[in-house]
Length: 221
Ligand SMILES: CC(C)(COP(=O)(O)OP(=O)(O)OC[C@H]1O[C@@H](n2cnc3c(N)ncnc32)[C@H](O)[C@@H]1OP(=O)(O)O)[C@@H](O)C(=O)NCCC(=O)NCCS
Image 1 (cartoon, rainbow, N blue to C red):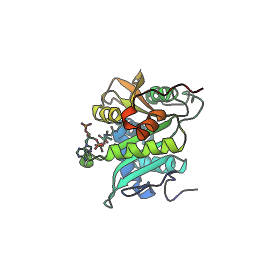
Image 2 (image 1 turned 60 degrees about the vertical axis):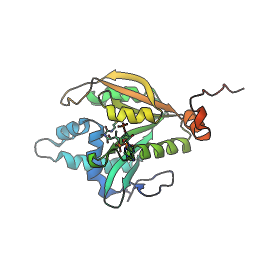
Image 3 (image 1 turned 90 degrees about the horizontal axis):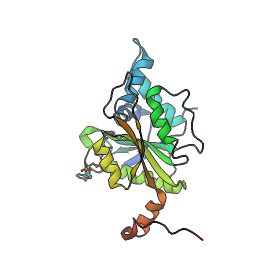
Image 4 (image 1 turned 120 degrees about the vertical axis):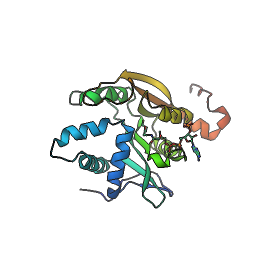
């Protein structure tokens, strides 16, 4: 059964709110920007010559909401300006047998961090960038990961996406692994997909004592 809006496990204050079905067209565009055009190439392939790829993209956002993805938009009452989408990764590695070739390296990277809270999408419309929306959404992702007891936050980014990598480094993520991109119909920017990870342990220390954020936790016992 279709939901009216995404279920979000932590309280949200304006300008953040759960994704709603009428956000789906804008969120499809944001989602495609975050993928570097990889999503649109798949929607074009699936739509065929008579179909509408952006309509497939719009419907995909609603399916993701209905399948339990956490989807949060930033809206200052003028419509969606930015989005965050994520979910916990499964505890067991996912098979890549039925995955489209271009997506295989991304799934392989996600398989390296089972149980992490994965930011699948973080994106701001071009006209609203550089206003702190990305950092604000990253903050709520950290809150969700901590609330769910996840040991890591994780995301995959193109090595050509310097703007996003700067944001992630500033927020405490570091590179964990990389895989060469597979290019077919899609020939987006970059050579490698990069897995970036932030331990939630570091998040907790940072909040408790910002001066000691980089001190490793002592082994227990
Ligand atoms: C990466 C992305 C999400 C960042 O979003 P954003 O809303 O611009 O993020 P922020 O505003 O928090 O930070 C961006 C810059 O603005 C600066 N900034 C933050 N708050 C600011 C403010 N109030 N005033 C001025 N500048 C500010 C930040 O310092 C940062 O500077 P930097 O580029 O030197 O690192 C955005 O560029 C984007 O949507 N890119 C396309 C989609 C994408 O690639 N997503 C990631 C896929 S993995």
